[in-house]
Length: 181
Image (tube, rainbow, N blue to C red):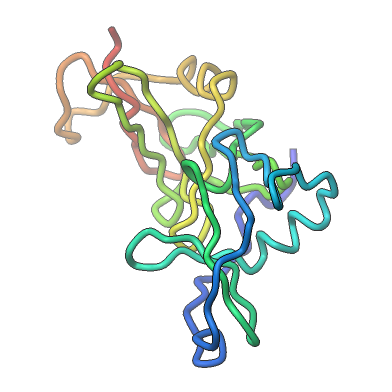
């Protein structure tokens, strides 16, 4: 487990240079976190990390690769990252939950990096996420979510939640995960 599990990232804002010529790149990020260029998987993790370092999400939900010289829209099927590992330190309100992304970044769930769970109304399938940085989230993969669910407890009295709802503590914040059913 890393000693410092905070993301270490700061909020990036658009710059005038990044508002230069815009286009579209033939890059797609699949729901499982795989990056593709011109239909083929990008096999070099270092290259994916480089692209991810200039990834940005606009106010309309569009995803862009932005450098000082140019920018281009890319396709993202769901969110750009996946959470592939969970680290737990402590317990109760003092517990710290940290997630390792598919690009080996660690992010701890806290007020700046909240957890959220979305339920598909048609199928009932849930999709859990953690905010990594700059409106960019990681989908918490099913095995990691099962580990997280094992830590779930009833919400404290001061949290307004349905009676059958469970959640987890991280960095003094209680995050609702959903129904215990």
